Image 1: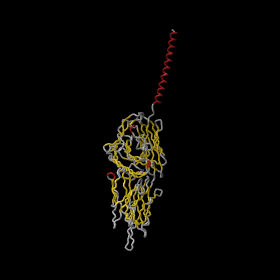
Image 2 (image 1 turned 180 degrees about the vertical axis):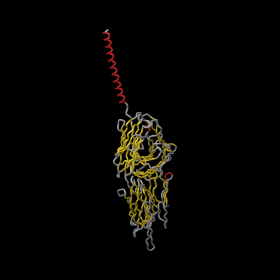
Image 3 (image 1 turned 90 degrees about the vertical axis):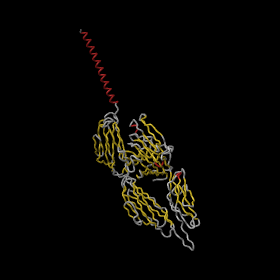
Image 4 (image 1 turned 90 degrees about the horizontal axis):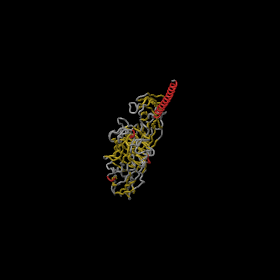
Length: 605
C-alpha cells in the first residue's frame, strides 16, 4: 500500500512539474508573440502640408499660413503635436484657429495638440491657420516650417515667401524721331513699381534749352511744369504703374540747319536713383537762300504711315506721304532692315510712287522701314523719315491636326507601377486638349501635368506669346499653363500657370521655373517667382486670354488684357521652346482646352 501511494505521488509530482513547464513555456510564447505583434505593427503614417497665401510680398504685408495634418492609416494616433516657430522677420497676428484640438501661441511659437481618428473618419485630419506680419524692410526670403510628432518620427513641411520692397523702373519715349521748328513733341514716361512695397516716387525731367513746356499738357499724379523742369510725384503700390505724358514746343536756335534734342527723366523713391535712356529728336530747319534769280528748298521729309497687319502669304503695303515738287523729284528710296538702327540685312528699294507692296511668304520676324526723297540736281539725298515696323511669326488655331503638336498618351500609375488610368494630349474638335482621367487610386493621380511643346521655335530671346485657355468641365484643384521657355530636352521649363485654389473655384496665377522637369509630372510646380490671387481678367468657366512678353530674362504678364507686371526669371534667355501645360493637383478628371496659339518674334508687348 505504501509502495503504491509512493508511486502515485511521484507520478503526480512528475505530471505537475511537466504541466508547470508547459504552462511557463506557453506564457513565454504568448509574451513573445505579444511583443512581436507590438513591434511589427507599423507606426501610424502622418502627412503634414503647409501652405502660404503668397510666395512674394512686400514689407508690412500679412501672410496667412494653413497647415493640414492628416492620418492616412486605419489606426488612431494619440498625442499628435505641432510646433511652428516664426522667424525673426515675422510678427504673430492674433489669428490662430484649428478645426479641433488644443492650440495656442507664445513668444512667436505656434503649438497644437490633438488626437487623429483613423483615415476617413470625421477627425482624421486637422486644419490649423494663423497669420503673421512681415517686419523686415529689406530684400529677403522667409522660410517657415511646421514640425509634427506623434507617429514615432519627426515630420516637417516648409514654405517660403520672398520679401521685396518697392523697386522702380522707368522708361521714356517721344512722339517724333524727326521734326521741324515749332513742331510739338509729346513725351511719355512709364514708371513701374516692380516690387511689393508701396513707394512714394518722385520723377524729374530737365528739358532741353530748345524746348518750351506746353502749359497744362501733363497728365497723372501731382504735377509741376516750368520752362526748364517737369516734375511728378505719386504713390505706387505693389506692381503698380503710372504713365506721365507732357508736351513741349520746339524753339530752334538761330543759324542752325539741323540739330538734335535729347531728353532724359529720372526717378527716386526706392532708395536709389533710376534714369531712363535718352530719347532723341532730330530737327531739320527749312530755309530759303535768296540769290539773284536762284533759290533752294531744303529737301522735304516724308511721313511713313503705320504698316497694316500682314495678309495672306505675309503680304502688306508700306506707304508714305506723297511729296510733290516742281519740277518733279527723282523718286523715293525705301530702306528695309531687320534692326531699328538699319545695320542688319539692309535692302534699298526704289519707287516712283508713295508706296511699295511687299510679300514675305513663310518668313518670320520683324522688319523695319524708312523712306526718303532724292533729287540729284537740287538736294541730293534727302533726310530719312520716321521708322515703322511689321512683325509676323507663328499662329495655330488647331484646326489642322498636322500642324506639329504632339498627340500622345500615358498611364497613371501608383508606387508599385500598377495602372489606374491614363492622360493624353491631342487635337480635339478644333482645339488642343490636355486630359487627365479619373483614376481609381486617388493618391496616384496627383500632379500629373503633361506639357506639349510647339513645333515653332522663337528665333531669339525677345518675343510675344499668347493663347486662350479654359477648364472644359469645371475641374477643381487643377491648373493650366502657357510655357514661355523650355530647353530642347524638355527637362527645364518656365511657365505661366492659372489654377483653382478654393472650393468656390476662384482663380490664382503664378510664374514657375522648373529646373528638373520629369515629364509628365509637376509641370506647374517649382521655384515660384510670383504668386498672385488677383482674379481680374480671369474667367472661371470661360476662356482666359493670356499674353506673355519675353525680353531676355524679363517677363511681362497680361491676363485678359490687364497688365500684371514685369518680372525677372534668370536663365530664361537660354531657352528655345514654347508650348502648353496643364493637369491636376488633387481631383480628377481634368479637361483643359487651348486655342489661338500665337508667337511673334522681336516684339515685346
